[in-house]
Length: 322
Image (cartoon, rainbow, N blue to C red; front, top):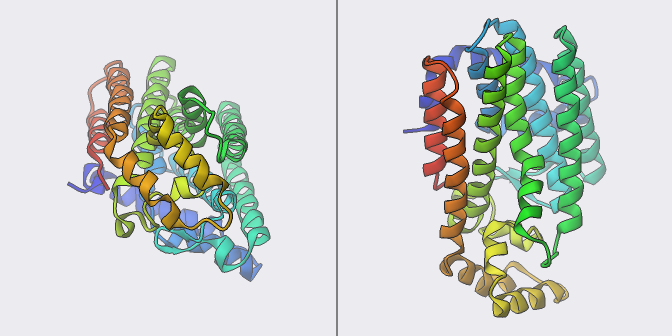
């Protein structure tokens, strides 16, 4: 089953949000307009708006309120991807040239900043200070996550705790915020809001761990970029951290990192070892532990269609292999 089938009953509301996202990013400046539209039109699951809508189903669901929150969070996510590609010097995103490769780093950074600004402007239609506070705190955490990613590139002395803190800030916090802000916009009870936030956090952690696994196990066609791209760009993810327990592999990887004019071919032997030494299986086990906590958070919520859908999404994430 495709992910979109799980929440197909939201199709009409998501179409409304998609239209609003595209309207919000329009600019009189042709470069900003084209650059902003490029990544949004390249696809994406729009999973953050889905979490906003599902959280809202536990309270007073008003589409205009849900739309404002969903659009803002999707724009923040998109802006973070643009900045990510600059940090990682990535040439491809979802099978298409990145903004930084099509234009340059400066255009990419200003485009990301523009999307952040549009996100904040869009949320002014929500008359709730807590929603604005959550959004601001989320953006701060995202920025800290970006800084940590830069600091930890090519660093073979980091540990799993550092990695988990980084992916919390880069991925999980925005999914958790999507659930929380959807709940706030719908005036969900405090207890249910906390449960939804916890669910979003744990699902987000699992989602990013599996993303990091798939960077090694999925095909280039499925990824839209070469296998092992994260490692080639110097990003040390969970399968790599587990693999670094092998001193010989750690030495081999250090040698590759120190090599001048290194190419993706230089990483082939290390990537093969990571895929076959049990690190992938261990990473899946940690992902499963986060998913178990996500299910436990859902147990605190009343039975309705949204709860079943959230369970379905968690189950899909846990089985994701591409």
